[in-house]
Length: 472
Image 1 (cartoon, rainbow, N blue to C red):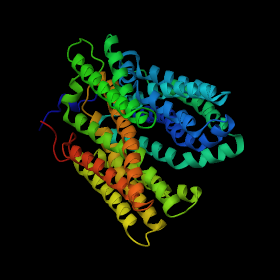
Image 2: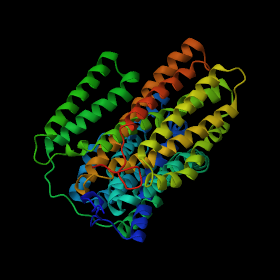
Image 3: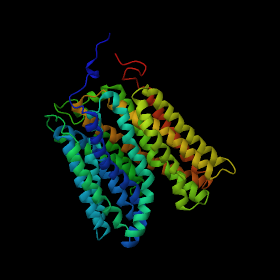
Image 4: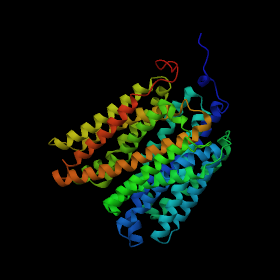
């Protein structure tokens, strides 16, 4: 009989089932708050612009600065959790986010509002990596997929109710209510985290200041070049920023191999599953952030439906994800992750094919879109929990925060790239072919990104008994 390996023994951080699920509930509430924010703020932008007599281009910074502030520090905040405690960093993130929401709700001008939104983004960046890091330590290896499946439902619920809640709140309380509603949720998340999230061991490592500076510079330049450059900067400057960001990133990675206490320990990339899953999550970030742009364009401009009908038309995607998420999470602990992920990516590619074909077919209407987004929702459910559990399952507890920071940074980079690429492709397509056929180009671009995720998933291998073998 085979003796258990070091990876299969129960680490001391694993909690009793009840305690682990309570910790997941507290973590999910804070995570939900940050995801809900991203989906409700867009609803309030027109009213914010009208209230401050600002043009929409300037007002969009209320959303853009938040995304920049979230993504830029993730490589740093993940490792800070390893060093100072994931519970402490999570609670600090919730506090900073909530204070930023209070400042946003009481802002008297567009400039102060944008500054407050940056504070909110920093708070989200502090708490996000801690959620994955804690979940992957308090649950045993064979239950992490189940836990992450439930955790993934949080995102589906946020995406489903965000626009609905946002519209209702703005109608009754004005745009200030969008930010004020975070206050009771933030206070509750702090109380529950204090009671339910355990204190986990910390890493007695020094935080290398040069690595922090390089990480912030690299991610900040790359994301700024992609997100801001095409609209606000000359092309040469945007490309120069992107090149400088890539160079800073290469310098950062090289430094991690030389310093005694790296911000991102290179050994996390030695785990093939982590590396493959990180590439796959970039593709998922690309799709999640960009796919609704051509869908909404097609529904409202091509098919002529109202914004309200367009919003409800894509609800099946979130509903399917909510229903299937916990089920797929259980399967992620029992089946070969390659099988689940490949199934998911192939299903999502099929959905993009359905949408592309519909833009070419005469008579394609609302029913086609509803069917396609339902297929898309089913496909993505196969990936979220499976990918997260497989990426982190075999990593040592002392690098969970750093690995989570890398994983979330990859997702954010995929997101800003997706919005930029799909926006550009769709603009070119609409100019060349019109508002319906031209949108199809965007679905093809998303399909290409999904193909990249599919290729990355082919390199995943089983990690638990019963999944078709374990790594020797």
